[in-house]
Length: 157
Length: 157
Image (cartoon, rainbow over all chains, first blue to last red; front, top):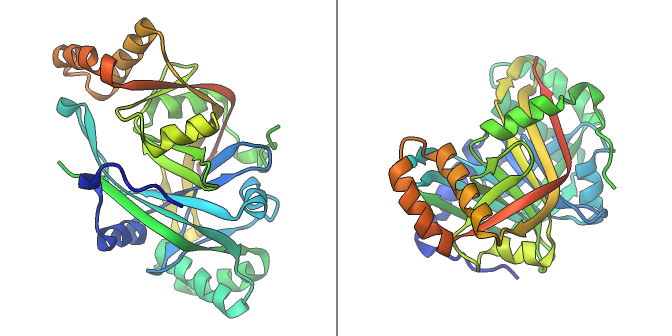
């Protein structure tokens, strides 16, 4: 189903890929629209070593409509980058997760994922975070991307 | 064809969008594959105030195959971001270009685009850049994305 990576020397280990996914501040969610256009939107996310999670405060967003049309998505996280002007190139590291995106319906799972998101993005606001989670649990949709394939590549020198 | 932006208060002006496109170090190119999977890959690029350009040193890459399958692409550039933990949110600014991607065949145009890329990424290496361009002109494919729609959004406080 998926092409093999062309430059084997740029491939990185699963541990390195996971590190990028754990540390990334945001990722780009690439989806396909019923209108015939791809759509790449930056989203905050959490990663638990297995799946990718993100939340959505509006059921009517374009990305949600796209996922309803085609649940297959690509989630791309870029780690550190540094220009190498003398080589006309760039140091970079990036990870890609290909998987099916689905709404998390189970309340307990949803709450656990919101806690993960608060812990990642607002670790110093646990108390107000708890109140936020209670409120958000009713108003927020949580999506889970279950990976079918994970790849990563880097140029480090 | 395209949805209207949901949060009007997050929309930014065309000048602000252009600034993000001029300054962005890389963008994510979202394409659709014949295999039924979206694909979002980071690429270096240049923007001349009208079109987006990027180069490819391998005609066999997955992104090139995807563009050959469906030339409609989405190109996403994220500008400055800053976590707002106390608001469980993030300051950000981003631009999206939706357009048709096509290989630039004209030699003079191709050379001018390579010069633009060298000027952006290696402004202090003009001399070796000129040699690089001569070499690259034969080996490199240049893609142009002609925008059909450009959008941008930001949260700044």
